[in-house]
Image (tube, rainbow, N blue to C red):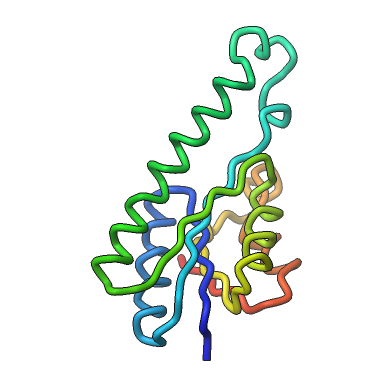
Length: 145
């Protein structure tokens, strides 16, 4: 059925549940996994005034350290489960763009990710990455809640 599963994670507790479900599915199907985390570009989060106190080089180093901290436990869990897993950091992108680019680049045939289940005003204000991925993906998406 599925041969290569992309698991998107941001390191949150809910995301860890999606990682566990995705790894379990991969093990049951004998599928390979790529775990991906995405970090936005420095210019999208740092106002001009902050650039003086938080240089782009520091931001890049911080995102690399953060990505390693998010992805390393996924690699460990995959190894423990006996699942072949690659780890991927997609820097300088919006989450939806990074997830979809990773799915295409890795030849994934399923995306597994968590949804925070925001509704109403919170969803309008904060958005929904899961909904964006569902809307724009050309492959199946499994949402874990």
